[in-house]
Image (cartoon, rainbow, N blue to C red; front, side):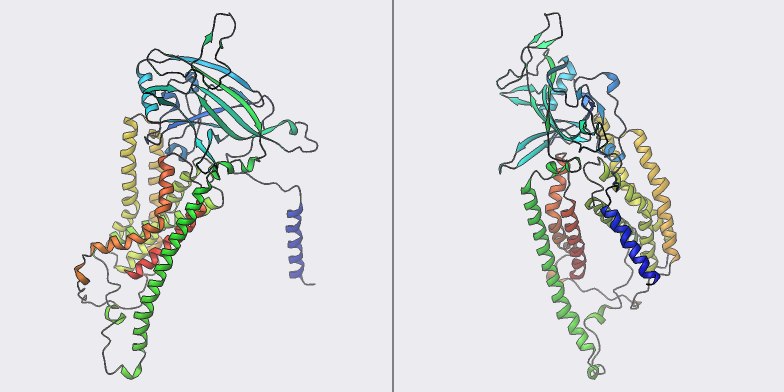
Length: 550
């Protein structure tokens, strides 16, 4: 037996041993490792933000008169993606402990007057919801769709309006879904621990009748809260008592799949997604047939005519491809701008492809809060080399290089500058409205450091490498005298071709854009990255075929 065969056998034995071994250790992504809670262990509840489908401005949890000491109103550290979308992690006064149920536990009382009352009324009128998190699980209100399938609403409604009167949801019935850790022989406390796999709530509006004359602890005579209880009105001078119940329920859902019920809650959406993909696929088939027809009827006919040696000396090649071959690779009117746009497009293409690949593999799951946006910003900065390199390569091919510095500077500052200017103006508006989505000064400085300290040098590096390469050689020469372009048929203006060429690609991604924009507008979680990747591939093929047709 040769050494090569022995090496292969050893490799097979090692791999088989790793598969069969019970001591193989897995890994978890940073920040989303499971936590085992013993009985009585505290379960911290963090306030995220206030969101509304009617108003896109998120607000801080403590911008309204909720219970909470001043020292608790400072958010814990969050990542860049969470900061950009206005998420926070502020401690609250909810005192939840593992397997310790509570019934109508009073937190504090608040008297509604002045500006806090006006803010509260406005937030209730704008349909704001309160977003809370516990053990990296969002607080949800469970319901059902019209088809009877389970549906989940992230956060609970702040209040409601009935008969022109506003009411506040001041009593929360928490249900914590737990999954007991599997028993491990030799581990004494393993059987007593549990993991949080769900965090549900049922909001109530309760006008508490307080008994504070007994001399003991303050109690509510309204408890336990049942149907028909008097709701809590939102009016000037009203005294509001905040309270909550806590129950625990065993769940068969394992910790690794605890997000699956939230993500698979609406099968109707998946049916719509498949319909969208079939629609996009049919558009792609139509364009493929159109391109094939053009190639067969035009190019093939020209090739046959050019290969007829007996006719070469009798007629000139004044039709078909040879009619325009000397003008196809002529430099456009603004080659520097074309190079900058091309470089930025290449950069966006690769960051989209890489981000979708990581998302499909599960590295950017909703459990990793802010991970998607953090990955997009990071990949955009690191892919700046692609932008500089692609722009340099194209510009050196279509022109001699008189504006190399302009192309390099444009790749580094043109599109990023527009993005930062728009972002800064929107941030000023968020500051003016005192929204929690407003970026702090340190965050703006961090973004500028990433731009000027990382992105710009990488663009220069990519441009340097691009200019050092040998320029791309085109297969045909360009005529010195440009051929006059004939007018379009039927007098159709040239600008209309831009609109027509964009209709079909937009039709491919239209339905997916609806889901993405709805997720952003309604502050929901977008998680169907597999569908998005399929649509992206179809979009790329559609754009390539449209470039052939037009």
